Image (tube, rainbow, N blue to C red; front, side, top):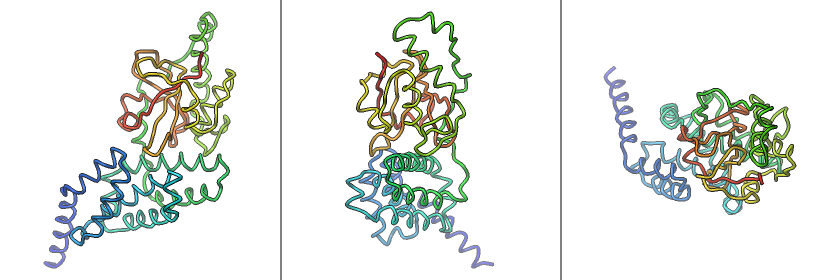
Length: 302
């Protein structure tokens, strides 16, 4: 009995210590700032130091940073086994005695990486890289099997979706009418499920949704979100208005795109194909997840 109590106390003290360790706090901060190379380097240093063997957090952050870095083509070429290694490390943490506690304390980051990997898988499938797509898809299944669905990345607008009066649109003129029509057209697909590399009303991914909606207005957008950003006319945040596109970055490039549905000068709200809920409306400015990843704006409306 006494031995069991001692073991329990050691476990509690160890987990408490890892939560208060400045080195671990630094890893968390650097990861939130998207300094993935630094997280990778520092987590390796901690893993080489026996003083930190009591904690799985260096292993966790090494895995998470590798999964982000692997989305960069150049990095992946130099570290061809990084996906398999990252998956092995992730499962090591997941199956450890404190794995559930670690995951519960880092649900925000897990939601972050899951969304990024799903977006990456969509790009791979769309580009015809079926081997890599299958590898990422299999990794996702193994990583998140048994972990409850995480929706922290989606903060839906609490107000009713904006409904456009078609007759009012027809009476408008020029760009304003086009913008209202784009929003009204996009809202027809609310609730459409998310599908990797999907580009039709049966299922969309993020860039598949924007390209499908804009095509109805004679705008042929590239299928990758990064290309949509590079090829669009850049817009300053203060000038953003409905019908413009909003882009997000995971630190390794553009990873998500949506269509702005709010008026100029109002809190920025978008409609987009969410990896967890399909096509929804999200208030960007009330979401810590999206605000941290906001990259820029572009327009295809004259």
